[in-house]
Image (cartoon, rainbow, N blue to C red):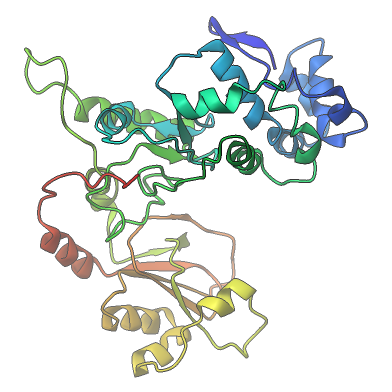
Length: 360
């Protein structure tokens, strides 16, 4: 929607989509409905069915057009950063990262939620086509695709031969309470996190503002880098405890269950621990206490959860979220953490001598 919010001009990312792509296309019903809305959109959407689902179907058409429009509006920027509205960007870390790159590479990060960054050279080549709009060449193909960020990566590859480069965990699709802390998430800086709600954005912004505050009155900048370790220390360490009822701590690396007890999902069968197993592992699915005994015995296990005959272990430690979906005591979710093991691992890491930036 083209509109103004608090004095900021919002551009319509879909106004240049081909009429041929919109015609008889159910994905654009919401778009046309909102364009014709005579009052506030909240009221119009309430009468227009499932606006969230319809918006998701519409969302995939935006990415290539946004890249084209962004370059037209700001053709001489060194870098272009694309994120969704629920993505948190740590700008001080981002600026440090891009400023210290020794090689200017044209790299996209195709997951729109986590974010992707594209250099001036890649954007110029992508948009400087003598044969017209690159976005319009993909309008008819997007209807059959799931996701606009995926299609943008394909369009960029076709137009410039630049491929996606994954720089996880610095560009990250998780947020503080779902980040998997441990060997892959410790001395690494983070630039983006995804799916933060307004409360989470507010609390993290307060923390970030204090973290990057100049250390003395004469300093205008700081060379500090906010690491994933810092996020753990601030947000998770005070909440670590032995167990939580009605809780899903997102353990799912290795699973233990009786495969004959019921019909399991394909992904669960793929992660089912195969023989050989210790006696603690063979009994892990029988109860929450047996699940804990397994995690204490398996060296690489930091946490676990138990739910309806399934014991799941994790090679990292996270907080997770409440899960009160089951009323039956036998089926309720319960999570546990081996806190002494977690603390001992953290102690062995010591101080991070320098940030581990992604290799590009």
